[in-house]
Length: 247
Image (cartoon, rainbow, N blue to C red; front, side, top):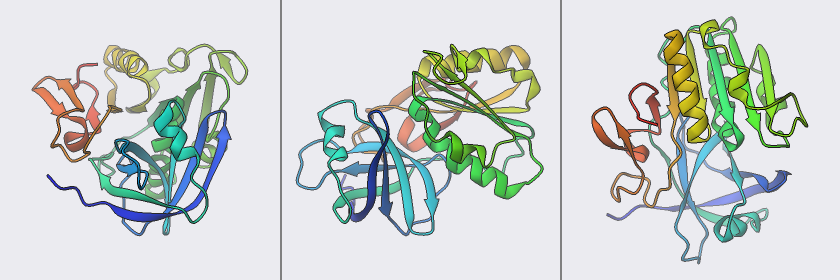
């Protein structure tokens, strides 16, 4: 199955925290919060990388990525006016037609990225809605100031205690205070959040992060286990009802 890629111009690419980069590309497509793009370096044989949309402003599309290996080291070398191959937006994001009521956005590490566009869209929809942020990091924090623009309250944790609560972000969350929890981050964190929500009968949706090769459901690399068997994270997700997927 041929996948159509197009070139996108790099507006900026900067390190915002240790090994965390903010990449802004020029792109004219409309997006939904929670969707992602497949990105690949021109002239490289490395597999494309799925990266969640962090924010869209006019024709500027923002991504966050962590440098964790040789592939992402190549992304860190991108500079203004370079071109990178992209395809997207892909996947099913958060359904903003739902009435989430009082909502908690729970994020871990790089999982904070899709929460920015989500928080912005929710706030644009309702100025009165209760939107609280819960974000956990290992040590340094990022994107918090931007997220605070749309949140009523922000609760921060770090493993080291450098910022906010020392420990896990799940230690701060009280699901019974919300109608819905929207979550993105490490699978072990999301599993704990779903368990906590189930105890309190709180609705929960999770944004799954899986390795992908195609991004369009053809290769079956990114399947996740659900109550109805295996589903493709890229095509059927990445956002799922937390009680539907098996974490």
